[in-house]
Image 1 (cartoon, rainbow, N blue to C red):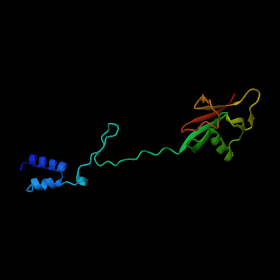
Image 2: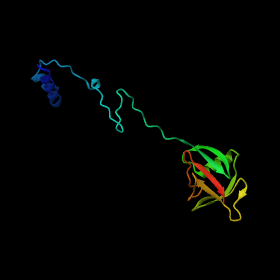
Image 3: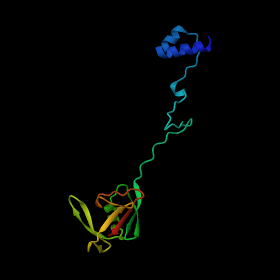
Image 4: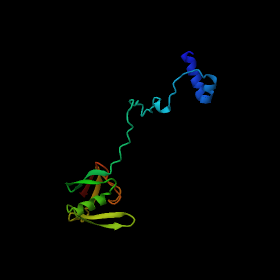
Length: 157
């Protein structure tokens, strides 16, 4: 039997069931391919074909720590924090390590207001102003999350 006819019979058998192949063409000796032996069809990602036998790689886990810098009146404090720690949380960690001091007051509807940093108090119309990556913050210190690479700066203005 020509190979073309054998493929037609095998294809039809796959549609109708293996029993039909045995009753219609019992003399055909064609190898049976198990699904596990069939060539693997791999999905392309972002238009890039995958190499044959390439392992599937899980997405990289989101970082759990952020490296950032806190600057107070020109003095830098390197930070390594949990992602989404607020600036207030970062400052509290620096207080715990003994390298920074600050005072302030919590306002229920506004958050935490910084009144002094390293002994320098808000006075005479000058206040501690918070900047994140060079932009003055529009929200309070307890609402600003620290992201990887951030430069957080307190300026006395």
